[in-house]
Image (cartoon, rainbow, N blue to C red; front, side, top):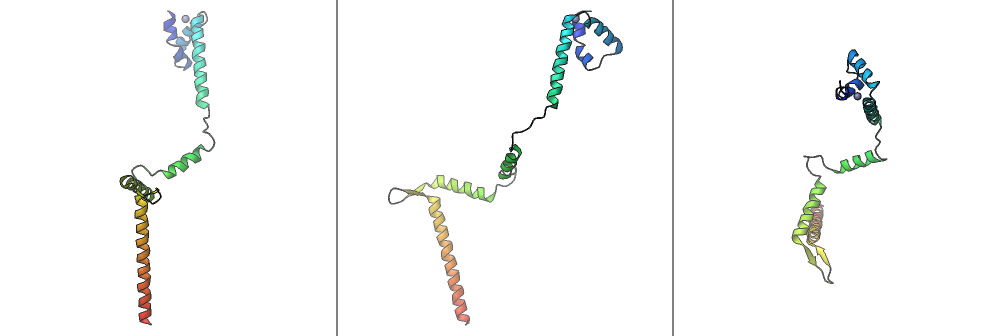
Length: 143
Ligand SMILES: [Zn+2]
């Protein structure tokens, strides 16, 4: 039998899958064939390296888990609703792009969304002052 017959059985030999007679036949060939003996040594070396690799402990860099958890906490779960604050922020950014900026005296500009925000805040303040004034009037009438 030629070397290719024995070479094709070397992996099975290493895996312990050959029968007693096949092992004896292969060992007989290996005892006088340096090529097949070298191939067996190479296969054994690769197997040992793979076994060592499988046992190697792959440690993440320090703080990796903490950074991943912190980042995951910031991201919404896929398919879930975006956080309200982010929706508002994105909407204001779109508004900012669409409306542009208002020129101020002195050459400066202010985003239109800010002007709208000031207007809403002023209206809310005026409404609160009006509500307080009406409550005060009702208190005075009841006295
Ligand atoms: Zn051989």
